[in-house]
Image 1 (cartoon, rainbow, N blue to C red):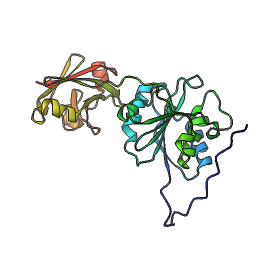
Image 2 (image 1 turned 90 degrees about the vertical axis):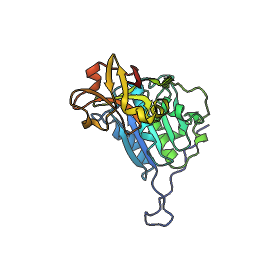
Image 3 (image 1 turned 120 degrees about the vertical axis):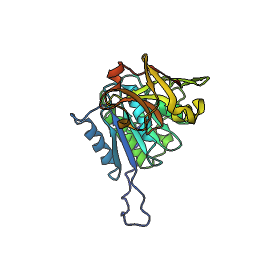
Length: 286
């Protein structure tokens, strides 16, 4: 029996119509870079199905195959978008294998991504999220290849979602998506121990220790006197902004995502202390 294609989208109302609604937003995050036509092809597929979609590039410069970096940046950026935004994330070293394609629905958003841990931070922050495996082939391109599911599978599924196709039509619910462990900082008598979550393009070391946790564990009055330690290197106190620290020295501050960050003014903190993702970071009153 042939699978039926979804109905063609209705002609959109004029933007001047009192009944008009904002165009649906679809974001893209990949490790595809800009040298090839991968990203452009995904956009073409989306617009061919829904020409009124508004496509936003989060980034296409995730380091190749780096699922953890993609997971962190997806979680960091996605929460700033309006409700009902559809987020497409493709960092997919297992493309073409038995790994499943996922549709995850949270309280505010829908996410399309391979089942390889890319949604770990999203699922950790949204424990009641609905997770489905994408199996309904009528929402894919006619022929799905084995090397480019971003174009053949995730892009068309996102476009059909933006046309209000119901999520339960895309595939069955599952309860065992692949996740990596999202570790939480440990607090012990005024001492907080966390780790480096992410290293950005400037070499800044972003940790999993929040400003809120530091205030609760150490106290607001003591924050300016804390000692931050990483790789046997100590930093005294917190700076207000990057230029508040002497150039070429390791320093710490609370960044705009409310997280403790180690940085080097006009330099790279990661190179200064030879740091990597997962390295321990300790904070306590000096």
